[in-house]
Image (cartoon, rainbow, N blue to C red; front, top):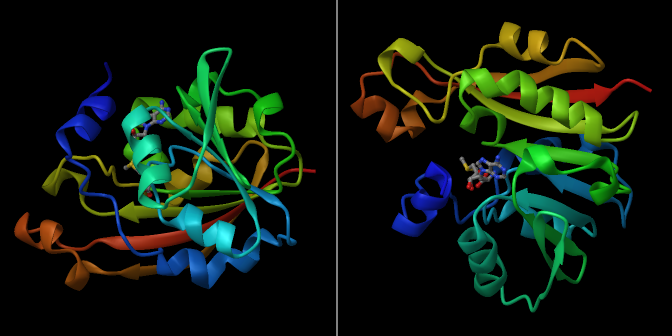
Length: 217
Ligand SMILES: C[S@@+](CC[C@H](N)C(=O)[O-])C[C@H]1O[C@@H](n2cnc3c(N)ncnc32)[C@H](O)[C@@H]1O
């Protein structure tokens, strides 16, 4: 059992928010989606951002290692689902949304087809440094050419607090996605005033950054 599965079982899901992420709402246009397009949400948890994407008329394909997270998502949002086993995944399906229960790194491009955009909030930054490059490489290998990714990250003095979430600077993001992606930072601001956990740890700042990536065509 992974640490993450245990966290879900223990209800230690401090990252989860009951409201839609304001940066998704502000920057969703960068994905240049059309009604009916599918959005990939890696390491999706039971994020309400998926409900927002559905409400905007998009389809959602997510992957999440915790079965509990996925079942809570469908139950809390009163969505009836069907379940089937495909390769190493349990695949939960409801109208316009498919959630793969299993390991992101085992997901194939053929599982996602066709997606037009991707949305990463608290996914890349959930992973320890040694998995980041694999995450970026794997993302490249499973999304189609030209696909845009809305990526939300955090940066703070890592020496002042341990992750997850792990700090990720702009230069680290640029370097991670330097092969095969165009990378543009859309916004970055210090939000320490709204982060009591980081204040309690005496962290000097916490920058919230938003990027639009595009896989090369
Ligand atoms: C910090 S949470 C973020 C969840 C979601 N993106 C959100 O914004 O609420 C990270 C999630 O990734 C899931 N996870 C971690 N490693 C994974 C993996 N290798 N494959 C699929 N899911 C994974 C965890 O169970 C957890 O729900």
